[in-house]
Amino acid sequence: MYFATGDVSGQVSEKLLEASKLADSGRYEESLESYLQAIQMDENNPTSWYCLGVIHHNLGNISESVESFQKSDELFPNHGATLANLAILLENKDLTSASEYASKAIIHFPDNSKLVALSKIQTSVADPPEKLFIEAKPIVDDSIVRTEQSLQDANLVDGESSIIAEAKSLTNTGEHSKAVSLWKGLLEGSPNSPEVWRGLASALDSAGYPDRAEQCRKRAENIDDSIENITIEVEEEMNSTEKLIEIAESIHHSESNFEEDRGDFEQSVSWYNMAINLLNEGKNEESISTFEKCIGGCPMGEIELKVKAHNGRGNALYNSGRYSESVIAYHTAISLDPQNVTGKTLFNMGSSYAAVEMFNDAIKCFTQSLERGLDKEQTELCEKQISRCRLLSREQSKRQSKL
Image 1 (spheres, rainbow, N blue to C red):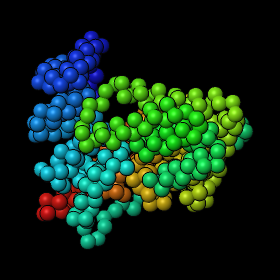
Image 2: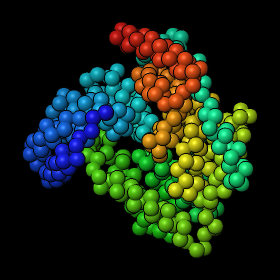
Image 3: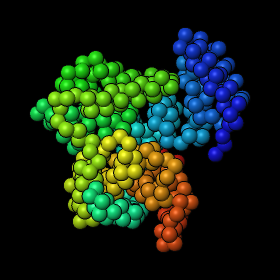
Image 4: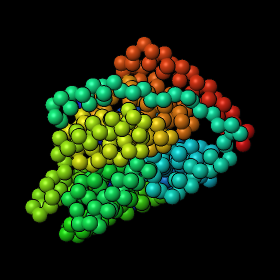
């Protein structure tokens, strides 16, 4: 991947800030010119292309907007807002492509009814008489089993819906600290889910923090509006997300009349070990809910344990046939620690993508996994999956071209 030098990067950032201020004041033509200048400085900056797409849309240049978003997607694949914008813009121009983008976007925005409806169009018209699928199960990460034993020695979508139900139940029974903790855990995995933000708002209301609850509700409303209105994602929104997460954290730790902090490492490890045992016994649904308890109660700084728990949850979801949810779980694990992604995680994520017939994304995951330490047997299996996905992708394209 190309990286701009420090001087160029700083110049681009300044130009993007300038363009953003112009856009905020409604001076779209001038903003457009600034974004084009930023692209001239660094044509491989996906943010510049994304923002250019937004400005073109505001100016009514739909074709140029689509081209800009597609360039951003090429440079930074699977960015939720980019995929959602492409789905909406292409709805009346290329329904097949719009449906494909929507199918990818709902992984990031599962509660958006517009995207859900678009994603179902492809399924209703393009499914072959006989479903094509890859008969492959995720590679079980041996390091998880080893970690389970070492932790014991040291005394250490509907998976999401089940934890949401539990969080609501805890609020109803007055266990506000634990409810906030569970919503906070969900928020880390789904920062763009308005349902989760509203759930956290409700929990904060019940805990006696109406002002902070209102902040969460506004965040949910902004997310709802951001897709259909195609608004610019600015750095301030990211900072706002971080602040609200910190607010939830401070509630959890500071309220003296709450129960003892559930973000306890030993308790989280206990849940993790139990989830691993359930997974090995084939009790996938129980394993999923137990992994969620581990994730929801895990201290903020215990990234390694969270990564392993999200990976384990992804495996359990895959085994249960809940492939789209498993993609979210693997994606969350990767986003928590992108520098230490294992080949097995990428392979498992590729298997999930293949299971929902997103073959090009599956190929990307499988290809990247080959570079990250698979053993000989796993490498051979991965290469076979790449070949199968390429074949299935071609067949899928042929079917769609006949529509």
